[in-house]
Picture 1 (spheres, one colour):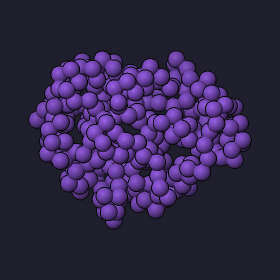
Picture 2: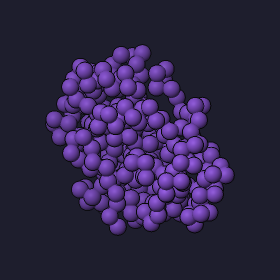
Picture 3: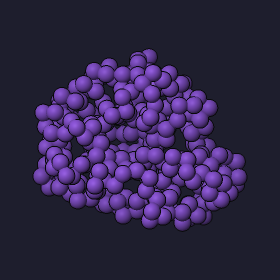
Picture 4: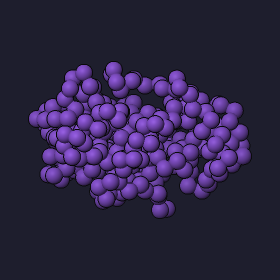
Length: 271
């Protein structure tokens, strides 16, 4: 199967659908990654704070390096130039990799005021070949504008909380204006709205599950999605979304689900 990819502003490609590994236990991560590889996944998203980079590395051990796309993220307590370089190498050691395909600053933590020098460290990591692409997560326009103004380097991706109940249209428009790809974390909204009548109705229309409809919405919207699961049957279900598309009416119906209070996670301006 040829999976859809998104071209990043540095010329590299990222598989549009991946596996999120948040809250995947260290002891089960290797088995989950192996099962995902068997199901067809080639894009894996972890982070230092998840505590499972070692298990992810074990799970990837049998795969050809060029066939997989691996993302990890720098946690807040390791921000700062030298600390970032050290943390990145620690992540690579745990993952058993010579490089990651994408390295992200996990949160801006603006009150600490370290995200610009941290970004300079990511630029260095890219120059040294330890990270093929670099980006951010949970950054707002003012944070990104400062990065670009002070370093001249635009992030390839901003990974943000995004789902049909929290569509982040203004931030997505900013990304589009600056050539930044949008990646959705918690793309299923932590399953809190999959029983919405609109989603249930579209699932019946297409002969799919509600989760498949929502994942397909992300893909049709041009977003990168990393739904999380540790269950083998859900791994397959979440990946089996390439055989249908949503029409304009479907997408309009899902677009109407957006809510001002739809955020589940922390606010990047205060976290």
